[in-house]
Length: 297
Image (cartoon, rainbow, N blue to C red; front, side, top):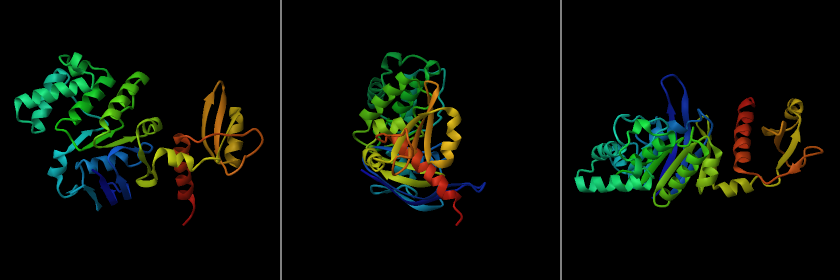
């Protein structure tokens, strides 16, 4: 099972070009699509999920032409959008049975068995009789995954699934996604770097509708080895350092500012070399893109 996206472009009626010749090869397993808000991630997810048309390009899910044969895609697709509504006064069990019927699971016994199995898998079986409107944010996300898994999909899309979750719920959700991702294509669209580094064997970074980088997290981190430098400075020193060096990130720590600089050698006294992490890759790719965009053609 694999998803092949080639030269996909989409411009909205207001003139916003959301996707610019996007090409990706997405294998079986967890695939991370990482980018800031407004990068085009949701536009790409909606296009793959057959919720909007592309202007140009192609998407192939094994033998299925995604852009032309939408009904075939929907039969094998599970989708958890960034925002999804529920009927607040209906129990999880009843609502999941309703979604199963809409999904085309006509046999009552099969429907009941699959609903019970998914509630167990998402650790919601003990609250299956509770109204979904009373669920916490993390429980609602797990319910969203349960409905997305109805019908045993071959392709699962989850859009910003951990935004707003507390650390414990985020860990539970990670464990759930990790189990699911063994047997189907799972696209995890997020702006949270840790989601991708924790879960995904393959990834891409996207910004302003363009793919900036693809690869596996370990390889792309190794590509920056020996080029990331760290220093603890006073906050007032930051503007001068940004003017003289390529500062890719800064954060407060114990009242001071920790900066990461991208450079081929030690920028100045006091900097120490550090092993790059996926945040360094992400910030450097986004910053380099912005710098290239400012260069006159």
